[in-house]
Image: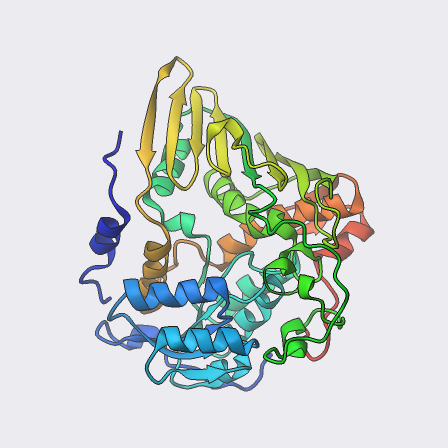
Length: 430
């Protein structure tokens, strides 16, 4: 049993004393040339709930490492809240291109809705900015590939918000799996189980309306199809509409898929997904209940998500992963991992969490200075996002699909292949 370390002590130990398209935009100087005594100058693109959480983390838990130069959001309410949180003379922008054009910004934190992850990330790379971008890496698979390619082409440090990659107990669990401690892993089970309240409840079927006067709705839509404003297609509820997201399968499941990909490899041969809107009689499009089965080289992965009942699977939290090996099972979530050996199930080994979020951001800042690969880079984020996107494609076409991980193509199914990308509303083209 690892001694439980408090989050505060862990943050202090890992951060204390450490100081470590084609828009014709001006590039920032290479961050490696700034020196360890220089603060990294940040701009924040998308300052809703998650964006403000990131801003607070950088300001409060990483003191002395960053200057917050600008905040950007198309909703003036989010923008003003972020500016108050940042304090000082922070600039307020409505258009992310102004942030990318700024010579006094070295790196950007991107956390708008999913359909706005890829385009700012790609253009930030083109503008010479380093990037911390929320998951999933794109609204679709092609977007993720283009972000990963842009990061490599422009030699940018791009970290993805899959913070488990910086969590010591996740790192230790993956090491033990890959070292063969639980034997040959042939079956992996991952799950999310939420109550209807946790997922926003029944969102109903309200009529279209005028957008709030504080919102630039055309910019909020961006590359998505032009539609009349509806309060249920906005802010948190955007997750439930294919124009903007892939529901919780891609938006939260990616955290679990990332750990599986990290431990077992990213290759997938085929996937089939079933489910539907079985709980909610409302206007959402994504399923509230689904199960996906992945045929992967050497093992099978099953992922379950449900919105109608929060009873924890196997008595754990609302999420988790079981790696079943020939010598034992490793069960992991954000609080701990447990190893249950096949030859002695009465004496499990438990290792507790020691923080993730702040160490993940600290790792990114360190890599911005050193130019080393971050714990979760663009290629990792893209490959982990593929799992959820493929599950959604299978669900939408209603059949099993075959995947070629080398070419990143769906085999013999033009209808499913069309969902690897989307139509883009001008001028937001890729």
